[in-house]
Amino acid sequence: MAAISTHEGALHASEGLPVEDLVERYRRVGSAVVQDSPWGEKIQRNELLTLDVDVLSPCARHHSISAQNAGQVSARVISAGANIPTTAEAEEILFQRGILCLPDFVSNCGGVFGGSMAYTGLSPGLIRNFITQRIGKRISWIIQGALRRPDCHQAGSD
Image (tube, rainbow, N blue to C red; front, side, top):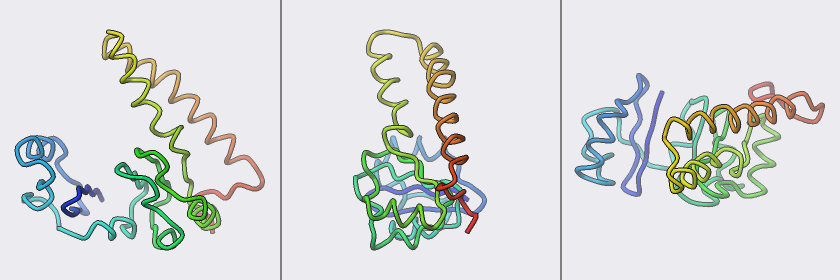
């Protein structure tokens, strides 16, 4: 399953979405891409939290997952693209439910590093290699270490 959203709504499809086609359509129509799309099913943005997905990536604004809606999250992992997408109360609820919630400064740091490195003139290949080899490996190490802790619930183990 895949889903996307803009301020105009959301779109999902159990068989996946054609990302390249959606990006091209977005270039032409902007946020209306979810209304203008021939692919998938149109849904309300708040329904994104309840979709049966492995990874949920809140990327638009802070505190989009709160104590009021954290119980509705169906994803096994939250990997933020936005700064502070969950409230402290929501993080505790997600933890208690066994949902792995990666800190925003971990999951979206590649964009900051990549943008800064591109600004200095480094090649896309060098940037990609640095992020994959240095940042990716460290994030994996952090997650594996956290999962070995006796007080850490593995996602989906409740």
